[in-house]
Image (cartoon, protein in one colour):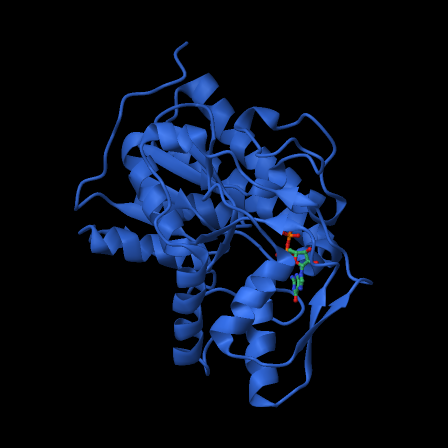
Length: 322
Ligand code: GDP
């Protein structure tokens, strides 16, 4: 059986369900779709629809009959949240993926795009990480529950395609940041957490800001509007069984990242490294050659993306998630 299915590009009036439309990724997908003229979007909130409930998801698909699904709903967090809320990170993410993918199949969705994460790859994976390195080694322990749920999701897509010919594709984004991120001091990812720490330290004239770990781990960061453009592009053009990495192909150390955020925020104190906190995986750089061959590359560099995110943060001082 061929692994590629016939293209089914979206029309302006196609009915498109974005799961997780209030989140970092989902809200960016909605912006990208609206900018491209799509006007028939179905955007229930997590209060309207609990994706962990199989019955609720099944009723929703029966009533709404969406043609396209962006599965961007997930329980997410930084290294500490992943490590503490291990049961929920596994259960919630497994249930959301299984319920949405199964109901999408049952109700004949034309195409579904599942969002995974670069933490699906082994902790000591050769760098940059090619899609073929999946399941070749042990996972990073701090985010193993999340990674297992994301691997299950991409395997659901692969196997509904193998068994039923469903056009379900999966994209694995690198570390993301941008508007509508979570800026929680303890539970967020490094970029929003440090942005808020520098901002508050500046306002309160604090002499130091604490950065977790040694500052030496290397990470890749993609601005979420770049990701959203890639996802709309893939929904319209990518029909292969193999999942696809989405990143910039560039990496920075956590120390360099911290200094860049510090400069954008304009904080003049010192950085202190708390080595009692975990570093997590030493390096996490995606190989983006499959995406490049499909015809897409990132546009927004890290400094510009941090400036845009900080401008958004300042404009949403009362309402950002924390
Ligand atoms: P990861 O990519 O899954 O490890 O998740 P994070 O984005 O949470 O963390 C990336 C790296 O940044 C790790 O090495 C953390 O120890 C480091 N880091 C430094 N300061 C912070 C912080 O304030 N919050 C978080 N979440 N990570 C931090």
